[in-house]
Image 1: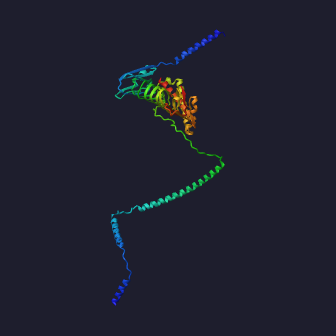
Image 2: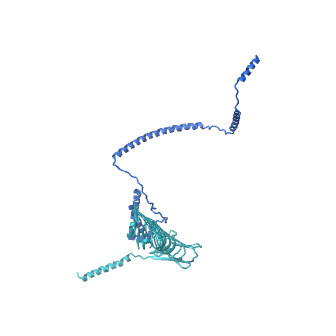
Image 3: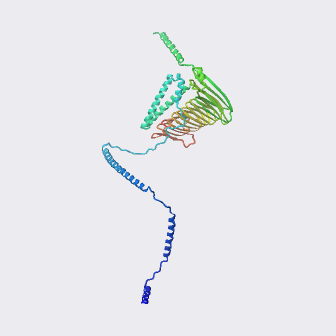
Length: 203
Length: 301
């Protein structure tokens, strides 16, 4: 009985299909084992970190902040609605105005402007001639009370006022050749009077 | 009325008029006491630079052939009261310093113990230096006159006059409300002027002017090399013997270039700029001027 079974088993084995094992399998197994060894070694070298105790507090604070931002977002949305309405009103009123106003045209062109250094700035002594005149007048009353001297001083005062007025006009409305030329004339007259007054005081 | 009667009346009027003319200046005149302190010093010259730091001074410098620097300083005090004039003269101070590099002259006014200066104080420098002595002069409220120096000269003056005669060298003038008059200047002259009138006659060599406001009057002489003016709001007038003797590069903003009649067509006016470029490729000396809001005038002598 036993031999019969053995015979059958041997026969069955001989009938089984033959398989040649893959030679790369052992290499793969070896490589995997090597990798696990390396991983284990690397894990021991990693720093140990503990979670921050304040994590939950930070999360809660973040949530509160988000809620506030949401509120702000809501108010921004209201502003946006209002701005949209205002923009629409402006848009339609512009169209209306365009239909109502007289026809105008705007042209754009380019001009080449010569660059002049204007006005020329010179590195001259910072001297106040009025200080000299006033100081000298305290010593030389008879000269300063002379009618000619007083008249020149009055002219100087008037020119100063006029120059200041012109500077204000330039600041408000910009330069124009006519204004600058008037200014040049007055500045030259002013410097001539100043030179004369100082010459009189020196004599 | 007879002719003799009319003559008598005219004679009376004439006498009255003459009396008035005679009396008028008498009424306006005032006797002023002048107290002067004179300082004299001669220094043997050994290639030093002359430096003057002055205030309320009239400075006169002249080049001479001697190897000596001759200094004369007059400290002046004017007052109707002679005692006050004398007392105030003490407030007029001066210094004379000399070293191997420089001779330094300084004057200033200083009142001590709350003394109130009531006199008109001033200083007059009369200096003679060798022709080749370089000079650096600063003055305030006074005139500077220099002649016959053939050296490097720097002048800085405010509220006075600057007069230069027969100079040759590297001359630099800085002026603030100080009119400049220069005659017969050779070498290189640079003027920087604020609100001053500049007159340069018989200019030889090269002249450069940078100015703001005022007026420039220039005429070239023999040996003229060139003129360059960069001005703002300054009137410019150049007088030439012959228009064709020079090259021109002229430009003004918001005003005109005016030439002798037969050359006026050469100016080009574009928008608010007038300009003229003429004879520039020739070997002729160039008159190069730029200004604004004022005319440039080229005219014949």
